[in-house]
Length: 123
Image (tube, rainbow, N blue to C red; front, side, top):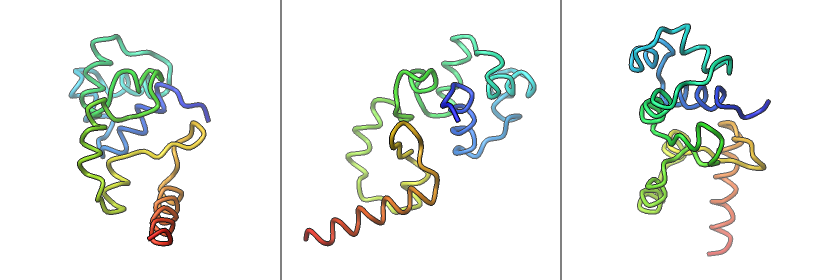
């Protein structure tokens, strides 16, 4: 499956726990109009895209496919300050991307477990 504007919007919306209706209301749009963005049938105008990025706590660069990171630029600094996170916190705050594809929940957990095992073996 291609990583499109619509798929990024849908993934981040679901990750945030918001419904299409809720985001549509925040944008001042109807649910059917918002659904067209997720289906890649319409591209939101720049003002709507900016507002959507803010709602989803990401950047317009990520939504448009310019950046691979769904976190805004200043999130890197916050990440360094919050490296000691539980698995559930990691899952809700970050996407783990491998070869251009976001790992699903189980793959993410296995990757974190592997890194923890690797760290313990090097101590």
